[in-house]
Image (cartoon, rainbow, N blue to C red):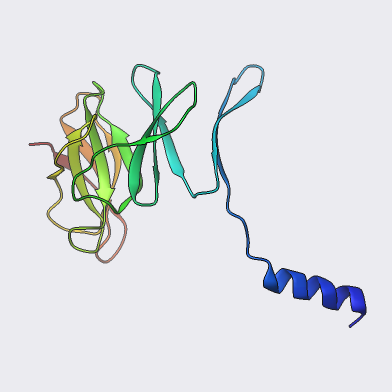
Length: 158
């Protein structure tokens, strides 16, 4: 092994990786990209609000709201649900937020809460379950339930 290779390996083994995340929009017709938010934290799953005024995304177990014009994201009060994953989304009318969170039983369960925050209401009795969609009429959720495999099941919202 030569001197340059040894130095490169030493550098790679001592330099911690830097994580960066960027939330961008792109105009489909022109492919023009616009950076809305950049952070050195891990963020996932941005969703447009129904009125197009803000994004929702998750990071560090929380759900955040960010104006489409940028700025500082604000955490949504999700009560005890502080281990949210990237399976979240808005109801068709934009008033409710479905989340998948691991806090209550140590495995993902699905909850619904008001879009501006509040106490989550548990929807799935068993987990792990991961939210994936809301019916157009707002009466059912689609999710994956995976105790022994991968199975999609609808559930009626109470």
